[in-house]
Image (tube, rainbow, N blue to C red; front, top):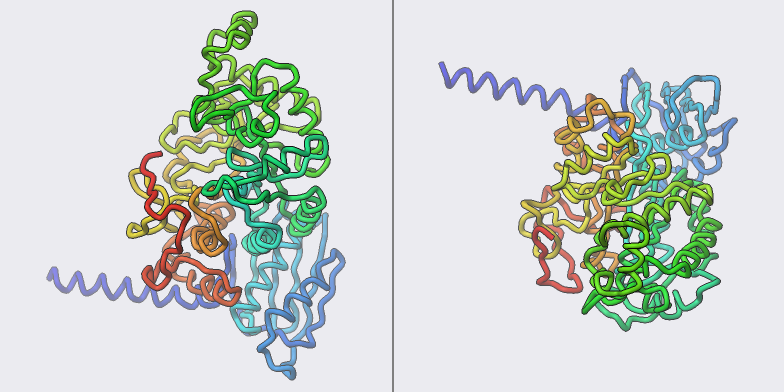
Amino acid sequence: MKIRNLERRIVIVAMACLLSLPMVSQVPLFPTPVEVRKAEGYFMVGRNLQIGSNGGYAALLAGKLGEELKEVSADTRASGEVFLELNELAGLPDEGYTMEVTPAKVVLKASSAAGLFYAKETFLQLAETAGGKIRCCRIEDAPRYSWRGFMLDESRHFFGKEKVKQYLDMMASLKLNVFHWHLTDEPGWRIEIKKYPKLTSEGAVGNWHDPKAPAQFYTQDDIREIVSYAAERHIMILPEFDMPGHATAVCRSYPEVSGGGEGKWEGFTFHPCKEETFEFISHIFDEIISLFPSPYIHVGGDEVHFGNQSWYTDPEIQQFIKDKNLGNEVGLEHYFIRRIADMLASKGKTMIGWDEIVDAGVSPEKAVVMWWRHDRKHQLVKALENGYKVIMTPRRPLYGDFVQYGQHTVGRFWDGYNPIEDICRFPEPIIHLAQGYEDQLMGLQFSMWTERVADEKRLDFMMFPRLAAVAESAWTPAKKKDCSLFMQKLPKFLKLLDRLGIYYFNPFQPDATPEPDAPDKDDVLKNG
């Protein structure tokens, strides 16, 4: 009897898997839409397809289809037309869209330009994966979170304009909409500031594994070009200017604003008391704000204790703590953060900082918190209880410098690592902590720190296919997300990466994609 019951269960599971396969093969979309209703018949995409629009993107769609369908026979006849309809009165959610596919016509409809753009991206994915033969269906779609981000650290290692553009293209396809650009830190300063040229002539020299590497940075014209490129893809760029710690590249360029530090942490912090420090920062903000239209500026605010040893012995700093009744060096750190928040508010910007800023007493009206310390869940709860809006980017599972397979030898571990399945399941394991505060969760992002990522091949390997799972968790509602089905259709995404020439880790054949070399092959970090 037990054997028969087991056999019956196996048959049921097998049937369920078979029934799910048509859905997966016909709608291999990344991220998974909210609602897909299939219908009979197919729409054929040919080279003579008619494309119209009242809201733009028709020419862009035509050009992309020409690239995607090069292998389609020139005499393949399209079955009708595609129309992109922008209708602000349609009442669709911001960034949401509908798609109606019939044998004669495809109608993409949205109430916002971003929604129409994402409808276009969905159609492109369908056309590419189906080889131009699209199953008739109706799709209704809108994002779970408004903040769907990816952070790239270019202070540790610099990758350049063309690589950033390639990643912006991938983000757009996956409906990710925030590129958090980590341009300043200890190893190098990567953005031209006209008022302070030594930030690039001296501060841009070196990287994480070679302190004498030639200076690499983005000119202001480069920045404008990339910001415009991102905006065309409905991606906001969030610049990060670290303070009061992680300021080593600044302080070696302009020692007069340095707050000291010892050993390898020399020059790690800004001087927290000098008025010229705040004037210096204010002038840099002015140039950054002129380049980035984002309503937010990220200022870091983390790990100050690594290199503030001089704060404890400097007579001027100690007297300042007493005069301002700050209590101690932590109080001084919080004073600094509050002052920066006020400075940015006076310039019309909202400060974003890592979750240490929750303890600084900054008004929730002036700051947004990025929760990153996965082992300090209480900090997430505290941020929410204190009224802050929060972006989730915990080290586990959303840091890209963690390994993604147990046999990998380079990267980080912390009681485990970050396989793609864990990213797909997020944020459900911790979402109960935000019960009652759901409206304060802006979204999530994948953060790629590059200490052990020195070239494009290794960067791609650590990024993909995990970025697709990030998009799934950021876009698809929890009740519609099925990680087992996501993994079933993932091979379609891997084929796209093959076609684009992007190196990646294959979770189905882990030994087929060897781990690329890194700057320090034996440097495996645990719980750090």
